[in-house]
Image (cartoon, rainbow, N blue to C red; front, side, top):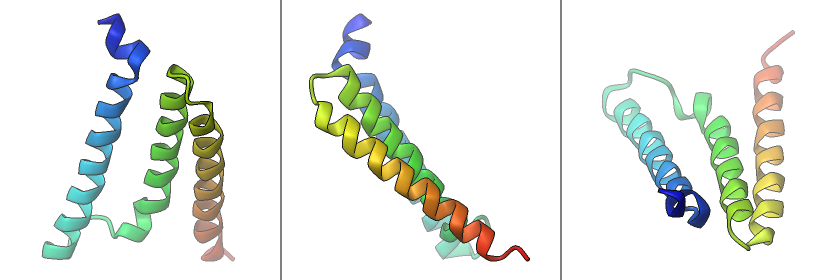
Length: 89
């Protein structure tokens, strides 16, 4: 069980499940017109995925993944806030 944590395999599984969830939400909305529009969750999902990539890099000796993950997470989070604030008076 410790191997799953230390090797990043567990994080890889969570990343995979998150990507599948985002794709399922997009397909459901595209086919039915119901549910959340991708613009409502995509940037937030990308920020979360980027944080998981940073965690993956921290668990393994890939420190460049930490920097890239945090950079993309911050950019996606800022973009999400900017999009949401745009519609506010």
